[in-house]
Length: 347
Image (cartoon, rainbow, N blue to C red; front, side, top):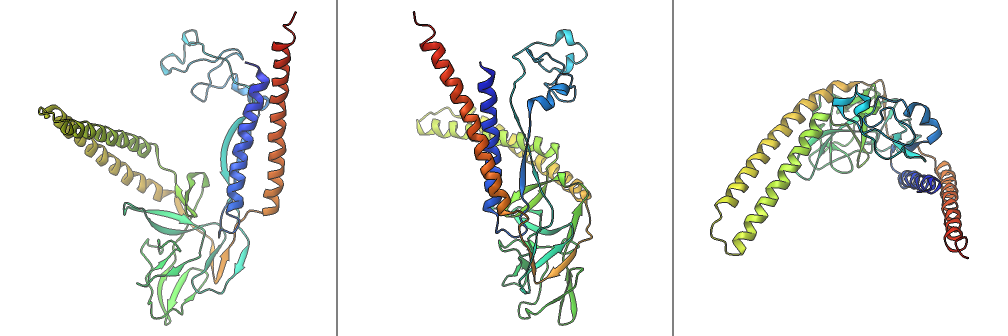
């Protein structure tokens, strides 16, 4: 395979990824407190020197450019037993996405239930999914409202929590409230609740969840338990379909299939219990990652998106030009191969 073709191909893939991230930023230009994302990449020449001798990642054991070494923990200290495979890939490597958590500009709305954080921190949100499962999420979007029961909620209906992780309930007949920079909410001169705000020492523990919310990244134990549970559910569904098909076809001896369904269901129940236990343990670990926020809360103000439309449009033009440059490389290779195959071989 011609290395130039692969290099151009990886370049196009990387630019497409950058375009996806950038267009998502543009789509959220008017989203309150949206934090823009960026994409990273690694050029071949910048990682070559340490990739040849890198022992930190599986699959990246010392190797020549022409070969790569198959990783096996049992043979880490025995290089002679490593098996060779294909060579090192050239070209650009798409890196990780990152989030810019810098504070966006403030907009005065004078709305009673609009709040903005001046400084690092996040509001606490009790999120409820379609399965009626609740979990703690985090947001900078302070565009709140009060529902018919008097609870302070997001525009999607999720409950805002106080400093003790309790739902904030106000008097729905008295919409005039008073607040201070600590997040204390007063009605009729009495303190009702204090809006919960937390911060994190390391924002790498956070990830986008959707609906302008963030969540703490699940631990390895939860991810492993979820994988086991999903496989158990799949096995149960397969066993049930086999039993249903046998019944539909009039098969009389169904004992083995019914036993298989019961066994699969038992495995699924056990996997579900393991998953719930892992989530409980992980929730306690996530709670320890939170720390007190030094942000002040401004009432009647909303934080806007921290992305610049002008900057993103300039980036779009640059991405398009770089994508076209890689296309031209592939076109040039195609023309050269056409000449080599169809013209140079003629007598």
